[in-house]
Image (cartoon, rainbow, N blue to C red; front, side):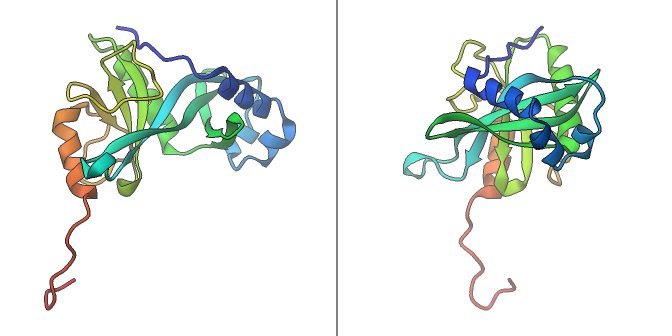
Length: 197
């Protein structure tokens, strides 16, 4: 079933297209693949990037917040880099280009999700405390992509490289994976006096 990719804010897309059209922005990018790309570059597959914070309001557990929009930068038939945008006091603005293992991993996870029997709204979920990024497949395809938290029936697909003990590219229900994640990022009481650190 096709993914229902939410439309990115128009200023976010414009800022990425302006950066792609700027020879100095592309030349100064720290992405060899982007600098050496032959032919036209395009910004595709905008995904809202949400960050999972340790504690939600009132300490009620993890909460998510929209951190930006990520666009895959394609050259010919494949993604060669990504572009992030961020919300500033003046609106959405280009942040930076980058490359690395999450580019191909995101592309693979999106292809796998396209083949699913259920329709989803794709998002990215960043878990900074675990150095983890996951494709978040939200069941409410009409939801505002800038808000919300993972619902128990939503799916999380950890992208490679995933933290030890969490399988990359294997869909997990939020109800199953989120408790594992929150246990790992929850602040502990610290070592007791006299015990090994």
